[in-house]
Length: 494
Image 1: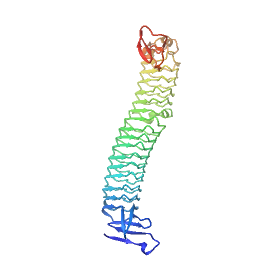
Image 2 (image 1 turned 60 degrees about the horizontal axis):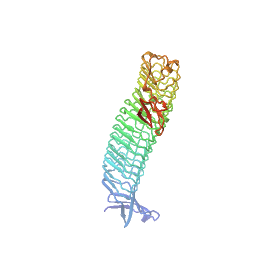
Image 3 (image 1 turned 90 degrees about the vertical axis):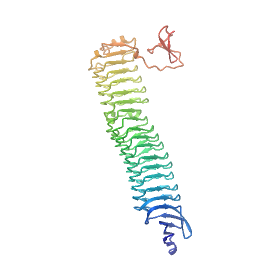
Image 4 (image 1 turned 120 degrees about the vertical axis):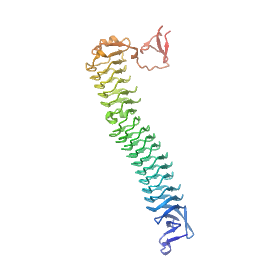
């Protein structure tokens, strides 16, 4: 067994360390603490770092691998003993023929650049005792195909796995809280990512240019998504945002050209500049955030002109001014919770075909649907009291307007201006035709028809003994013919 040593402790009593070589491994010994650190030396082939080393009859626990210990070494494999707690900075830097690494269960720290550009390393498992995967620790491991980050790890740092071009399998443990900036930048062969519920933040450019990434699921713990985190994902077709995301940064989904739909959770309070810019195939957007809808956003600019359908989710109460102005949507769904629509909110949506105004809306503001030239059908809730200036002007394709209010809402001469009213039928509740014919501007519609399709949406207490007809009018007693609503059920007359 070859041993080469500089035994300073013998010659100089004030020194407590010595450098030795045992079985091809070079150590620095600390006789005060009975520990050993693996240090730089001439390494090649297969390396096994044991738990202990014996020198001069004394056993030393091997607790660390020093900085740059194996830097540029031609080693093919390494097994790290369970007593090792620290792998130092650049410890295995550019070990270009390293193909196998087994990290002992005692390791708690993997330093910066520890395995930087180990270009032939095929897989790695980060044990749960490691709390932080330090910056650039596995960057440039181009043939790294499989990465397992076990439960216990709390942070994946800056560029930790950047430029791992061969990565196809990634498992992120359920204790990770932070995915740092550029952590998985340009992992070109990664096809799917599941971000666990433990993660609270995804850093800037974290998964940017992961060219093969098709599906992303973001856990409910994530609150912030950094700038450009998922930009330039040309094959991304599906992303699920967690229910607690509050902030989506700038250009987060920039040029995700195959993404076809997105749902913005109710928790979101801010969306950055150009977050969805150049998502050229985005056709359906669902927005469940009341905070987002009430702010001064231009959603036609945010999501682009490819969007054909917008669904505003239940719980949203207001839509801001000009929110969807000049959108190219054809379909629009508004929630029953909505009670405010801002001025010009849907103006010049040239391809919008129909709209139903919910019962909670009281006022339709000026220009709200002005210039919607493809709009053929409008249904106006029973609680609308006023419709503003040019609210439906130049809606030249209108053929059907259904109003549910028995009393005509206040309108102006310009409200329904610049389209041929003779080609449009105005449907009103049964018994209210004469009221509409008697009011200025409503009476300008030559085709006013009473219809049962104008029924109110009723909220009926099932414990109530009240009776209603199908027009929503309270009845003193059940009729002899027809139908009534009793205890929340439609029943035959007696």
